[in-house]
Amino acid sequence: MDIPAVSKILILDGAERVFGPLSFPAEWEERREVCANLYEAVRILSALSEEEFVIFVAPSRELTKEHVSFLSFLKRRPFIRCIALQPDSSVLPAELQQAIWEGVVLPCPKSVPLKEAVRWAAESGRNNTPEKIQNLSETDDIRISPEELEALFRPE
Amino acid sequence: MMENSREKILLIGSPQKALMNPGSLDGASVCESILGGIEQAQSVSFETIAVVLSCIQGHPREAIEALRKSSPQSRILLLAEMLEEPLARELTGHRSRLEAVADDYLICPVRTEELVSVSPAKPAAQPLPPEREQYYQERIRQLEKLATEDDLTGLKNRRYLNQFLAQVLALARQYQFPVTLLLFDIDNFKQYNDQFGHPVGDKVLIEAGEMIRRCCRSHDVVARIGGDEFAVVFWDLPEKQRAAAGAAPVEERQHYPARHPREPLFMAERFRKEISASRLTMLGPEGQGQLTISGGLASFPDDGKTSDELLKRADEALLEAKRQGKNQIVIIGSKTNAPRPSEESVTPEPGEPHQSADSKKQTGHPKRSESSRHSPGRKKL
Image (tube, rainbow over all chains, first blue to last red; front, side, top):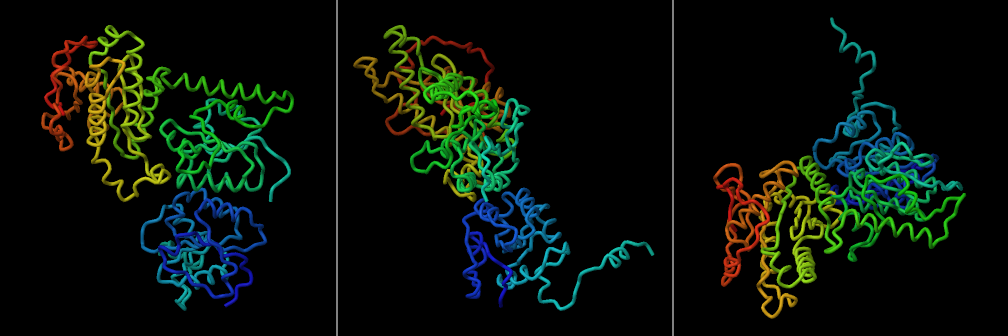
């Protein structure tokens, strides 16, 4: 499984504590880097050029610490794909929920293997759709077109 | 990628919170969030980076460390509120067990000029000789010290206490943590002055100040607020500061409020016992055991919600301690007559009198009117 476009997979230390050991194919290992905390992650990500396509993996709880400014940071840097690991169904702050809805942050529940999530994040762009990783295994496309959405709210 | 230009100041956090004169920040860059600051420091070189500590939502040490790595050559100046001073001291290496991650701190709000004055950079037009700049910086520190410290004991002064109490109570209301105020004075202090002279009286005050400092936690604020009157603010650290200090884990925090006012009471009692057993050579061969204190405790939120209310209630408890024979700590009762669960008595240790015979004999020179209202809820301990 090759993802040549991805130049770095940055993982927040602690992700493995909540998610179990994160195993990657050998060809990904050299692109993998672990950072100590969210501040360190922002420092590393800030130094990257916009040509580099990066996937950042962090437990959602860590993202909630500075979530408003972190989301602004992500929006300024569309070349970063952020995967939020969600070990449970704890409620996220509204801004983070909104960011997930907008596709800025990709939620990854414990049931989805992380390498699958990384592959998915690498292949999909930020297309502002409410698509979730949970839908990966589903063959049916559940996305609603603008016409269908409008029809839902149109009175008979 | 670092640009060649070198700017003077980056302020991270709200200028309104940090500065007395926020409109005068000409030429400085401002970034409201710490993450934005780290990002900016990565691309622009600054001489000074001033960080408002309260803008950090997560772990302050981690944040400042990342900032330091972003801009290793910058001087990092922390802008702390009074109640964040213990954290600021720790981050600037005032405690040996943890490494310094910032260069210096100031208590905010500060004047914009202070940000410049602590910067190693010198104005291009009128460069100051290094010794002159060092002299000015030293003078600023001395003035800050004079404004907030008692010069005899080195403890905080009444002005600092009043400001700190107001700030810590505002935070306690927001984050729901307990705050307990202890007021105490030295029993019959006037006698020591009259009998041994004022220099000995001063030494007694210094000794008492050092003892209470030793009996309290490093972040509790100890102040001398009058002649022989002292105050201690016992407060619980908000979560982020506890984490930064490597204190008890978050889970334990849920149990912490139950300790107030019991934990401060034990600290106050420990101090009372220590001072009454101390050997004060300046008081002559019979100095040991002569010096006693009386104190009163009041806690937020049960006994008062504002600093005025807490001061009043703690003072009432202190009067009650005097009235009941001195050499004791009294905790003010709740508004009802029934004692609260936290008002359990502290049993004196075997062989230790609750009230010394000496103190009963002393007539004293009451400095206050003792005609305040009867308070059945007070508990002698």
